[in-house]
Amino acid sequence: MSEATIAKMRERLAALAPSRVEIGDDSALHAGHAGARDGGGHYRLTIVASAFAGKNTLQRHRIVYDALGDMMQKEIHALAIKALPETD
Image 1 (cartoon, rainbow, N blue to C red):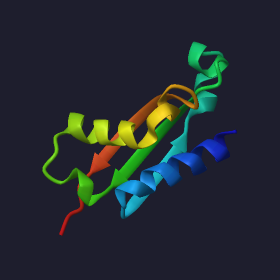
Image 2 (image 1 turned 30 degrees about the vertical axis):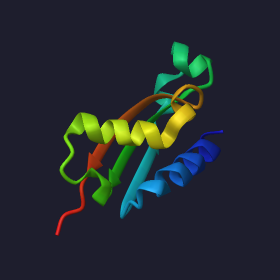
Image 3 (image 1 turned 60 degrees about the vertical axis):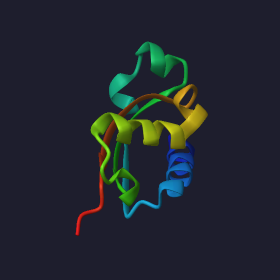
């Protein structure tokens, strides 16, 4: 399921036109955790996009959460986000 979840995450994050997206699956490190038992995975995300320019960390995270939508309620239990703006 994690490969399908990561593919779906990439598809949704594509709306932000990122120049870089790296997604790591840390779910195995949280086996037995309540969220893992309920089917939600633990992921790490590094994303670089011009959509983050001029935004603070909280605003960047909200943009990511909005792009992922209902996945944050089901497939994703925890998400560590590193969202960076494009640099010249």
